[in-house]
Length: 285
Picture 1: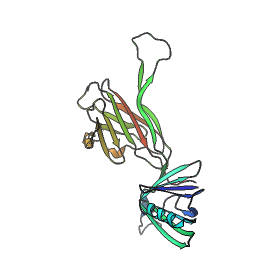
Picture 2 (picture 1 turned 135 degrees about the vertical axis):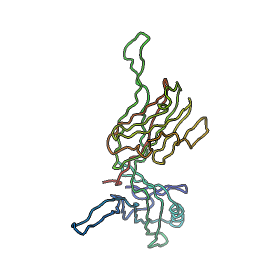
Picture 3 (picture 1 turned 90 degrees about the horizontal axis):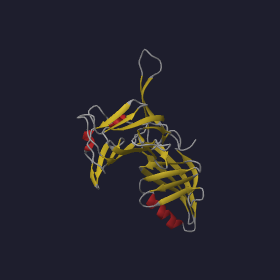
Picture 4 (picture 1 turned 30 degrees about the vertical axis):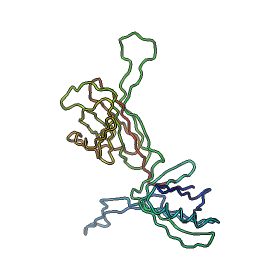
């Protein structure tokens, strides 16, 4: 096992083949939880009505033997003085987690040897893959298989994908709409873009008149809708979410999700894609 901690100051390596050896590690499995319960006089036991995962605490026991101990520790303390990303590499599986707090305690030290512990506090207790998952959900499928005679239909709009959430928790994606060409608006209300999760039955309608070359980014986790036109960023178009639509409703449940993206403009051309991070309750079983 090899752990990497990285932030704007630098990078530290722990474990296999690294300068800092790991003597003990904890906090890599299912996060602890806080439960809300109530008891009634006429019933035995209790009723649990709420369950919330706590912040994750990962603790490393480490040691280092080096003729250059002092500069190695100085560099390590500078890096560990700030929040950062902890990546765990098990060879066949790599996962990461964001650490908001880092605490260091040195228990023993000589001129060439030091023993210390590092505690990482992770506000979001779930691990993710090293890289987010990216998938297209709106494009064209070529229908030409043999020589043909015009006029005919050359392509079909392919607006559905099965998106696999391989993790253990619901996740909010980031959807990007790249406007290639604009056609016409046929309705006073049915225009813009609709995003549907046919598996959960939830949908979001962005009532927005876009322009060719524009890029629209909907971050469902952060609840933001951003328009980018020729380098100009406009971050206030969340008001164009149709009444009755909620950004909080559009998420991916664990397993397969049939996602559909609909460009409501007549003769519009757009490319719609999403990205997301699987969330895991453990680093490795």
